[in-house]
Image 1 (cartoon, each protein chain N blue to C red):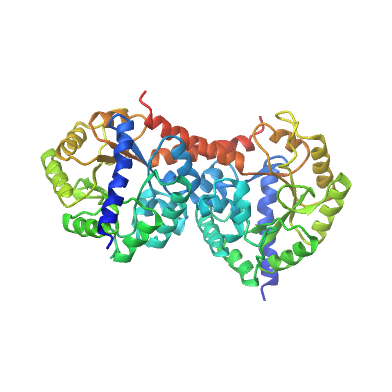
Image 2 (cartoon, one colour; image 1 turned 30 degrees about the vertical axis):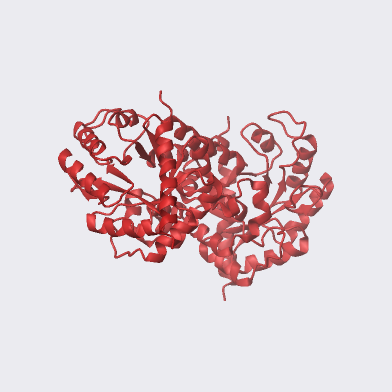
Length: 280
Length: 280
């Protein structure tokens, strides 16, 4: 009774994404980390021009001081302990303050390759959709798991962005593909199972690369993905103000930026507190 | 069976406060707002030298996008809808990441002059104490209500900081006292019912005052409070990097700083997002 409604809902969501890419002459950012899950800073990011935001469960581990964890690396190990209800609450809160014209893609426990069996139930998709998510930010590592997820997501009007990684990545954040032609093939497969946007993990490939540059191999992989699909493309990991131009030059549409925003925000807090405590 | 334990717990808590004041030659800050309730930014504030932090329920209205509220003025009207369990969760999370040497004073629904009957139950004090609070940040407006609160807080080892306001303040944030001699009298009464720290609301008195200065009447009121009591004193409201020196000159020990930190942090987020979206 709602299948066409949900199709329309997804189309409307993707219009926001396409508009953002168009406004930025082919490029935009997906603002995550602290700007994805704190309503005050989500608004601040929107103020700065962001129209795509991503709350996610590993960042919430850090936001909530879960288990006393203070590094993202450690947070990835325990992110499945964040509940779908916490993610729904966060999504609802951010939606409340940013309005309907902002695209929210949400990382939820079970949407990534989790270290413990974390099963997204049918009602979880409904819950996230009702909470105000436009889509799910996912990191499944098999086409079969991803296809299953996409099907249920679509049933409740949720788009899906999904990722490709390297077989030896420190954390498993996507379907594995190494050479550019493999990347192209996997990207096409992901597109064919209904993924709305396909991304490449780019965080682990910086050794020996000059500031402002990206590794030639990474460049080739990004370009292969961009050329392979018609849907919007993303790059996630290691993007900062020094190298983001090099990323844009590959033709990738959306730069997922978390840590480098978080760092600036945290530094601002540290500085202002320190200024108040300094006698000058 | 725990009354002496709790006495010792409170003494240990106040040692943190006294040490912070000593380290700052008579002055320190109580960092609140976003640095009080987000574990990432609480750590950033501690990094900047803060040892006193204050999570509170109106700030959580903003953090969680509750009802879509985006201004502190509006948040005050609905802060009682934040639950004690949410405040306990926030306190536990911040405590997890900042360790035991940081003083956490927590604003909880029922600890302020709420607009709907919001009753702190005995188990709520226990809950907050177990969550890791050193004290409660309160804004009761009668000595009787305050005394009742202090008694129960002490039972579970929680110190209390409480405030004095003007009768015509926009929000009722404390016991009312206008002239300096009234401030002194009320401050002494608060000290005598067992309050661990007494503060003055200073946010509403800036009209016609030059940048960097504070109103002479406010100055007199602050000095009257400082001279009247032996316990540490606080000033809360309207303190920024332009005027904090003028505040310190009154002899007040602790400057409660929320909005002006939040602003800097939000501006940092807006700027970095805008930098990523700008082609330069």
